[in-house]
Structures are given as C-alpha cells and as structure tokens.
Image 1: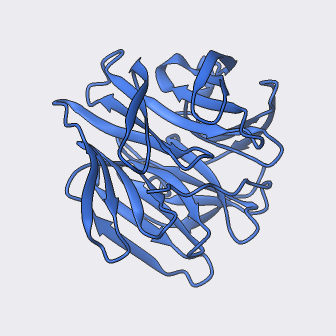
Image 2: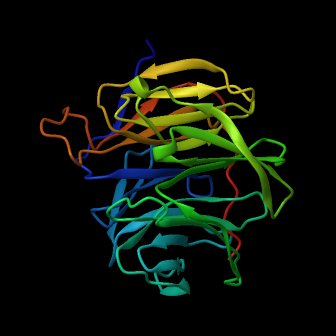
Length: 281
C-alpha cells in the first residue's frame, strides 16, 4: 500500500480541481459547493482561502498572472490585482460549472452539469482567451476529468455516469473519433478528475471508490492507490519536480465521513507529472 499524507487538513464540502501553479510554487484547489478557492504552499505550509460569489467548478492559472474561473454562470477572469470580469457569461437555470482543463494551445475546455444531474444536461466547451466559445460536446451528464497525452495528439475525457475514460484524437484545436480507453468496474466507484503523467498514463480519482487508479495508454490498469475516504474527486502532480500526487476529497453526502474527508491528500514520489499549460487570456 502506498503511504499517503494529509497535505491540507480541511472539511471541504466538495473539494475538487487541484492544479499546480509553477509560477508561484503553490497548489490551487477549490470547494465547489463552498464557493471557495484555496491555495497551499508545500514549502512554507502557507494557505489562503478566497470566497467566490457563486459556485466555482474549476480554477486554472493564466499565462500573464491571475486566474481563469469556471463559474456557475460562465467563465471569468481574475486579474493579478484581484479585479474580476466575465470572459463568457451564459447563465442557465439549474446548471453549474464543473471541471475544466487547459489544452496545450492555452484554451480552456470547460465542463458544465445540472444540479440535479439530469442526463444530457451538461456540456463541454472550448473557450479561447479572446472569449471565442465552441461547444465540443453538447449533451453530457457530469462533465469531469480532461487531459492530454504528452505529445498532444490525444485527449482524455470523463462523463462520470458512463463509468468510462474516453479518448479522442486531438489536432491542436479539434477533438474527434471518441472511443473508450477503459471502463471502470462497478465495484470500483465512478471516474471523476484525471491527470496524465510523463509516461502518458492516465491517473483517475474514483468517486465512492476510495482510490486513485493509473491506466496505461492502452487502457490497462497498472496501479491502484487505496485511500481512506470514499469520495476522492481529482488528482494532479505537484511539487518542484512534479513527483508528488495531490488528491482532493469530498464530504458531501456522507453520513459519517472519515476524519480526512474534505482534506487534500498527497502521495509523495508517486510518479512524474507533466507541466500544465496556463490559460492564454
């Protein structure tokens, strides 16, 4: 069993979306339903918390500093001086933002879902720094993990209720030829957030699975990291050498949550991650 540590002890309702910001040497993560953006500096232990005006599905660093936010009513930009403005505003009653990722070209691939998780009520859209929006997948249920292979020719994607990790051919802007990479067995939970490592393997956090799985580019399960709390939500490599795997967790819906539920866990020296591109906007 791989040893885990508690990086950030917290009681997040729906901890999610960890991302490593190399410019600041900090982990950024969110509590979606708590409307909070957290940061954590593993060198100093310093933590910050910022409250957002509405539920926040994902936060990613911007190339020029500041953050891009996938919010309930659309995508917004937070400047380094804390000024906020909308890049794309599209409120839909009953719908909220969920996971998002930055593609190799610096565009944001932002997901949405219905609060009631109605089938087909969510989307996946590509948003550029100029605010150009293109809906890539118009009918998904719980849009979740998105990532790219080391050479940028493949895109991985999860619509959680399907229990699949899907793979697309990717040409730098378009994703095509969707097909299953692997299907998660029912006893293992539901696939949630993912990250891709330097070997091209896909790591996925399993909601109600109390674990992170690693799959090879051929879709073969080759590593299981058991964790103590059921609702593991997303994972990312961080630290100066991108070798530590950070895992967010949730407390929502648990009658008797484990003491670390809602915290950020870390598995030191778990592997080797890929540098994540910043949003160019």
